[in-house]
Image 1 (spheres, rainbow, N blue to C red):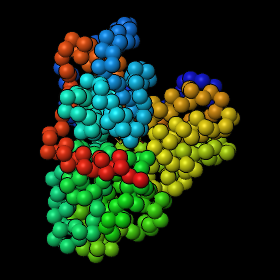
Image 2 (tube, protein in one colour):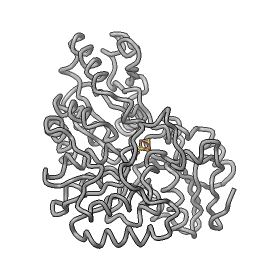
Image 3 (cartoon, helix red, strand yellow):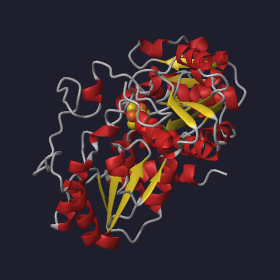
Image 4 (spheres, rainbow, N blue to C red):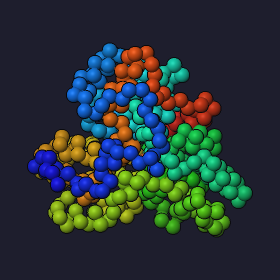
Length: 392
Ligand code: 13P
Ligand code: SF4
């Protein structure tokens, strides 16, 4: 282990750590998207200067959005940083920017394309920056489930809600069927809105955010929730289970937040007396229940900023963000909740060479890696996104 500051200790590397850092490739599991054009070498000592020069040449024509899980080398060039909700709003609020460079993952760039005008172009620096959770709900599977609910005469009772971390297709389905998008910072309001319109919710694709919000914020019981497995006939559920359920949770999860366990919480509480455990709601239910505070990445940052000097925090979310917060607050003891490295490998695909490449291409008059959602899907998805943006 390498001590970075007096309080920050780097988690141990796992066998896959280098791969998770985006320094390797796993052709069997990745989408196999090559970067067209000449990607600068990571060793190029002029990368920072090149990014700064290209960005300043573009001036107000470009707006760079950076999700909190991005690497430091990328986040320093963001005009705005934020959680998924804040970034969606920021994208919608920049009609003057010809190019939105989205340093985040594919579903976020899709949402930005939907929320911006047709003249604006949204660019994702590396097209392989997807999200394994978003990939766990495929439109055909959701339509099959919906037909099953239709056959049981349940669809009039069900409001579909999708987490922002889903494809534009899924958002379009939700928009067409009277539902709403939510993020980790407004899931409670989105569910309240939905239960004013129906007696059941189909929650896509993150079972944990759905369960945590329904049980810990809306007061439902675990028995009110059922898990719909798209790989099993009828989702692996009986008719009775579907009829009785309040929350039909899609069987999806975040592989990064899924690594935090109740043992991590117990272990840190034993090791660090008085520690505050602060986690993202994508963590498993038992972890969230055992934590002191839970919230979106933006919430996590605000909680750590506001914490008193000398306080101790074990944080259960992506490592780039936790490390950045620890280094920004040397007067507080901020540590990673898990003992081993836990990057989001797809967020990490966006690195400085990719950012330099897209900015220089834009300067040269070419638009690389543009994210375009087809107009019919965009129209329906926009309905669901606008409902979210209008939540009380
Ligand atoms: P928020 O930034 O909205 O909390 O989401 C976390 C996340 O997993 C993004 O992929
Ligand atoms: Fe997807 Fe999880 Fe990575 Fe967020 S942290 S982009 S949910 S895999």
